[in-house]
Image (tube, rainbow, N blue to C red; front, side, top):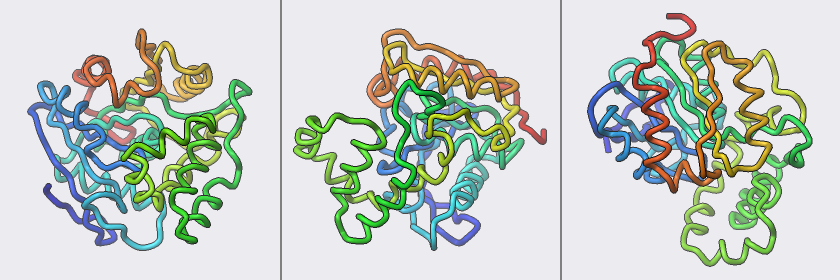
Length: 274
């Protein structure tokens, strides 16, 4: 992997493949860039695809005390290394960082693609616990990383308790536990968007081309949250992907890549300040 130095001196590792306009794939926390390897490969015929390890994950440094602003600076450094401008794409929890970066980085972000941002804007599912980020941090501090992952999966993601045993038996559980210290990162970025009330109207200023996609078979709250977000995006569009559910961003790379290519390949090269 190549490396770039973020504004606070933290080393951020990234990899590049393909040819065409730059597109940076943004992971959720608890996952390094390899989580989107199949999606990156499916996009490489149309884009120069950049994958990177978010701070505290994989080969990237952790830096000092965490703040969402540092992650925007990390993306700015990665985009600069990719040529100075790029589209951004993410699924689930990573969508909050993409929205924040598109707002903060202006013309450096040419367009965005969001797959199922986990916004809870009504009573279509229970809100997440208001203090879950603090609870997870306390468990990690007590070296109860597996318990932190379990809390996140059951209380935030909404995984039924009876599924946790089989999940723990899978090798991926240990990987997630190893990255449990990053669980609250997306939680801080998404604060105020998962409590069952309307989305904040003063958080994002995104005039770039934006597609918010949801799998046809996904839970209703993903659809209502996506539609609510699109009303705040002047160049936003809501899209339903037939036959897919929330896992598709990772498990159906060809279908998601095809949607992404249509959304971003012809995106105009301008942002809020461009």
